[in-house]
Amino acid sequence: MVPVKKNMDILYHSGTLLILLGLPFFLSGTVGLIRFPDIYTRLHALTKADNVGLGFVVSGLALQSGSWAVTAKLLLIWLLVLIASSASCHLIARSAMQKNIQPWTR
Amino acid sequence: MSWMHTTFALILLPAIVVGLFRILRGPTAADRMVTAQLFGTCGVAILLLLSTGMGNPVLLDIALVFALLAALTTMTFIRRTWHGSGKKKHGYSIS
Amino acid sequence: MSYFIFTIFDIVLVLSMVWIAWHLLGTEDIFKAVVLFISFGLLMALAWVRMRAPDVALAEAALGAGLTGPLFLSALRRMNRPRKGDRRLDSDEKR
Image (cartoon, rainbow over all chains, first blue to last red; front, side, top):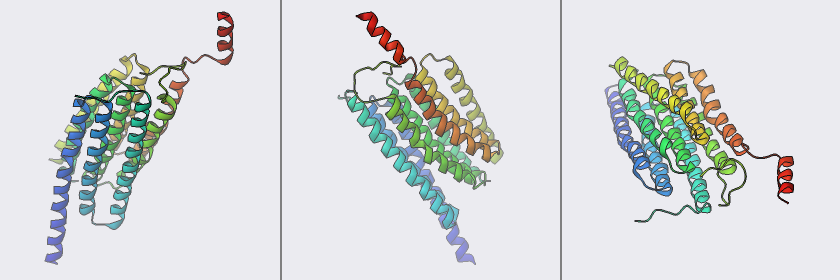
């Protein structure tokens, strides 16, 4: 009985560590949205950093959940967000290029 | 009820609130739309954390709906409101 | 501890919602108002979650984030667009 509990404890704390690792990605995505000078750089900051942060949060919560059904649902949510954000990033960048918005150069 | 997950959600909430500044002073329409997309991603993460923090697994379904419908608004924005071709058609003009 | 953090979460959520609503009603740019409305719907879903009404939050997520946003964006495209008869009259007038 004791090793099982210790095993669950390790899973719980590593899940907490993963969630803590994911939070700075979200905050840096927001900082990039505020600070970056251009629509393309803002897209870059947003759609990459946020999805990595969401991946860390999802994996941490999946480690803590302790059931396969919840893990599958969490991974499905992450997959949907990945598809949605990459598709919309591509669409917005292409439409901005077609509208002749020049990329920012130093 | 776990206060730790709620604290994480509370840390993520300023990421949404600070993003509102970009909506208010975004130069182009795409900047504002991209911020709405950031709200979708952050909202999904907050809902996932609150689902453990409040001990309510139903919130995962709400996050699933958010993830499903997040792309719809951006697709409509590109298809209907913010076309390619630089020439301005008649109608409501958006920079 | 948990109660304290939930209270801070609620206060931040409500204050940001009031701020969004203030700017939403005060702005002159219609597209900015639409994007602010979408983000208001997202925060409203979070508020329903905090009021322990996940079913209403599910409806708000589907309607506020998924349906009214594309509907408003589609309506924005048709605003100020002259009808067919008007356009023909204008071109006749020029000649």
